[in-house]
Image (cartoon, helix red, strand yellow):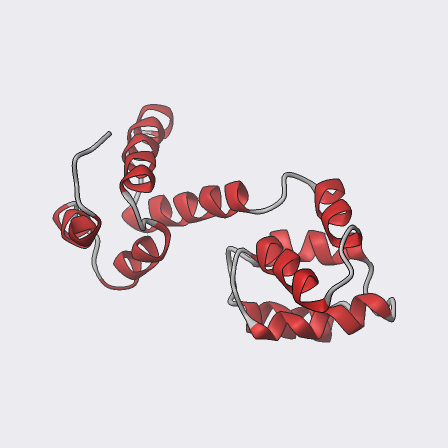
Length: 148
């Protein structure tokens, strides 16, 4: 394990050449030594497999990898978790895990799902597609305007 304190992770990322929005995105994801170690390994593995790529693409791919790790493995895992609970607060937590983001805006989805305005399967597919590209608010706007 890399012997770096949490408060110096920003400095390490700056030293690696990450600035601005990319640095901000990485700081949102890399919060401890273990995740930093995962990022180092990701850089090495990615370079071996694909050669050199831009920093922007590297950050995007790492962000997507971490979101996929934090979220549900598949639709069946999501639907099982969602249907096994009954409290609104707990349903919100499941939706936060699906979208890989904490947001009160996700409460909007619960009545939509209860009223069958959107199916659980469709929501799962759209969340997986949108979560790496858009914020929760933007994702909900797209779901509401394009898919309902």
